[in-house]
Every structure is written in C-alpha cells, then in structure tokens.
Amino acid sequence: MKEDLEMGEELMQQLRSRATELLLREEWNESVQAYSHFISLCQHHISRIHQHADPDHLFKLQKSLCLALSNRAEARSRLRDLANALQDCDGALEIEGTHFKTLLCKGKILLGLNRYSLALDCFKAALLDPQAGLKCGALEGYLERCKKLEHQSRTGAFDLSDWVVNGFRGKFPELAEYIGAVQIMKSEISGRGLFATKNVDAGTLVLVTKAIATERCILPEQNDDSADNIQLVMWKNFIDKVVESASKCKRLHHLISVLSNGEDEDVLEVPDVNLFRPETEESGLSMGKLDMGKILSILDVNSLVEDATSAKVLGKNSDYYGVGLWILPAFINHSCNPNARRLHVGDNVIVHTSRDVKAGEEITFAYFDVLSPWRKRKDMAKTWGFQCNCKRCKFEEQICSKMEIQEIQMGLERGLDMGDAIYRLEEGMRRWTVRGKEKGYLRASFWAAYSEAYESEKTVRRWGRRIPAVEAVVDSVLEAVGSDERVLKAFMAGLKRSGGGGVVEIERAMKLARGVYGKVVKKQAMRTLISLGY
Image (cartoon, rainbow, N blue to C red; front, side, top):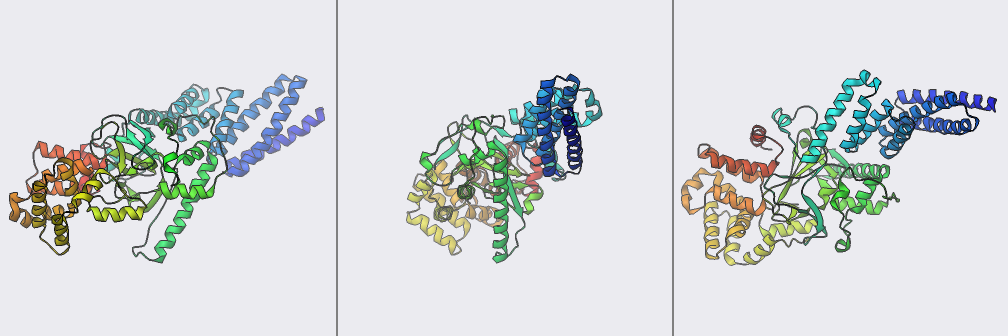
C-alpha cells in the first residue's frame, strides 16, 4: 500500500509539473488534459488517504487539488469553456473558500458573463486575502470595472461622450448588458415583438447587448463575383463562430434556439424577457445536439447587418461591412413608421427610441429606407420576403390611388420642379383633409423632393410661403417615422441659413439628434457627431 501511494505521488508530481509548464506556455487544451489527469489521480489518492487517516498528507493533497482545479479553470476560461471553468472554481472554493487565485479567476469569468454583482462579490472577497497586496492594483481595477458596469446595467446610464469627442481613438468603450422597460409579446406585425412597458421620449435606451458573434470584412467597390465570394467566406466564418459559442454555453445554446427560424411564427412560445438577463441561472436548461439546418435558418432570419438603414456604426468598424447575431434585438420587427434605431459600438449594439413612444407600443426598426414612396417600399418589402401592413402603408395604399398623387410622382420622374411638386402635394392634402400623422406619412414618402427643395436657396426664395417651412415638415416627419440623419441634416442646414436659430430651434435640433444617436452622449459630443455627419 505504501509503495503504491509513493509511486502514485511520483506520477502526480510529474503530471503537475507538466500541466503547469503547459499552462505557462499558454497551451490551453493540453494543459486542461494534463490537469484533468492529475485531478483524477489526486481525488483517487484522497479517497484512499481518508480510509487510512493521515491528516497531514490529506491536507497537502487537498491543497494540491485546490490549486489544480483553479489552474484548470484558468485554462478553460481561456478556451471560453466558461461553464466548466466555473465548476472548477466552485470545486476549488469548496476545499478552500478564500483561495485568492480561484476567487480572482471566478470573478473574471463572472465579469465576462456580465454577472456584475456576483463578480463584485468575488473580487471583494479576494481583496481580504493577504495575497491581495501583491496584485492590489489589478484587483482594484476589476472592482472599479464591476462597479461601473453594474451601475450601467441597473440604471441604463451610459455615456460615450469622451470617446466621441476624442475622435473615437483608443479602445471601444466597455458597455454593460442592459434591458430597459420592454417585454416580449405576440405581435400584430409578425410572430413575436418587443413592446414598451412605459411612456418614453425620443433617445431613450431600450437595450444594450453584445453580439453572440460578429464577422467583418472590407468589400471591393465593384459589386462583382469577388464581392460575392468574400461574403460567402465571411458568412461561413460567422456561422462557425455562432456554432462554437453555442456549443460551449448552455445559456447561449438555449437563447439561440428560442429565436424564430421563419416557420410557424404564430405558434411560437413567447419567452419572458428576464430569460435574456445575464444573471438568469442556467439550471434546468438543456444542451441538446445542434441542428445545423435550424441554426442556418435562425441566422438567415435574425442576423443583423451593421451598416443598415436604421443603424449607425461608430468608430473604426464603420470602415467595414459587418454582420452579427444579437439575441434580443432579433425580436424587433419592421414598420414603415418605425420608432427605434441602433448604434453599433464595437461588438455591442445600443437600441434607442427614435421618437416618443407610448406604453404598449411595439418597438420597430426600419428594415429599409422608409423615406420613400409607398410603391417603392412595397417592392423593397418583397425582397425581404414580407408584405408590410402597418398603418402608414394601409393609408398610403388608398391615397396613392388618387390621380393627383400619381401625376406628382410621374412629374418628379420627368424633372418637375421640386417646389411645384411640394406645392401640389400640400394643396392636395388640404383638399383631402389629410392631417396629423397622415400628413407626416406623405411628406416622408416625398422626402427626396422636400430635401432637394430646401437645399436650394433659389427654390426656397421662389416658392416662399407657398411651400411649408422646413421646421413644420421636419416635425411632422419626425412624428411619423422617427428621427433620421437626413432629416437632421436638412434641419441643421435650415438653421444655418437663418443665422443659427434661437433656443427653441436648438432644442428641436437636439431632440432630432437624440432620436438619431440616443441619449448616450452629452451636448458637446452630440455636436461633434452632427458635425462629423455620422
């Protein structure tokens, strides 16, 4: 028995040395294998020592087991095998509840999983350990990061001002996961949708979340076969990243499976929005085999292109064509009178309202350019594989049957003066008693004419008061389809022509800008974004 134990311990010592060497060389897979072998032998020896009551030897073995579990957790975390890494941390802490290295490792893993409060508890516990003095600076850094991210996640108070004013230099800002006043419900538009649970004004944050996976590339300027080939390679890489992430995390696997694959939309289960909060426990979640066919369908339906009609890409990623999977934003349906936009910051997406939204109203994006006439929008919807039946489309389908509307559209195609087109449309709306939001719908449909007219001082002088002031048109378009950078640009140009405007005009400009960029920057940074034309 004694000789067997000594031989076993000699083997264990060799394994531990080998595993440690692999860990230091950052050969993570090999390190995990070596530590797994060592841990199995160590656990076997501990069970035998228990039977022969050698307290000193048992204590040493338990210390070795604790350190091995901690080191394997570190290696697994580097491989993004976070669920098993956390299990190793918990196993080590069962042996020694205040083990500094394990508390630090567990805190970093929880931080990476966006479980800020739990991570904060780990770092605070590690700070009490005598070893903390050696790594006090790094530990204090983790504590500050946790406090900042926990505050963002709890309050939705994000501020990108410094990064924007500094010209987007340096690393992307670190952003917490955040879910605002929304819930998932059955949608009259399609399947399930995201709905506001309280009244909010333009620019209010709806949610902030990081992508499951992203892929980016620079596409050639010519739209030829090489561009198609690049996109095919890009799409394959993107799929591989999603599959890898889902295979390593029960929670991600489950969340991806909750998304629609484009079939049987009306019978899909409506999940509780709390399921998408990072602190939700993984217990009870299954980890079935990944169905590649279903994954492909889910990605085809739910992936988002970063540089889209309703989106702005901030920072260096604006030079790239990018695609990604963001789980909760995938529930947001299209409408031709949308009320939300998004900002892409690194791998994070910030969804905010683009106009005032009432409680119970569905949060919607514009999947394509909604500052377009009804027939053009109808064609664009077909390319997306659906027919839009929003209030705006129903109204415009009826009114576009009028001969006067068709004559204005044909006139514009043949070079009709923009001021003349606007005058005819405004007079028509007066005769047809078109008021309120419906007037905004038509002005949005003919936005190209309004925009071109307001850009021409000659046209503005010629038509004078026979066409509405830019402020009136901007306000009605904002109410109808939310903020848009083109509308903001036209309004700012009008302000410049009039000498800068007063307090009321400046506040109107800021409301427009908040609808485009969200309430994530202060006024000076907002002015920077407007001046850069983002």
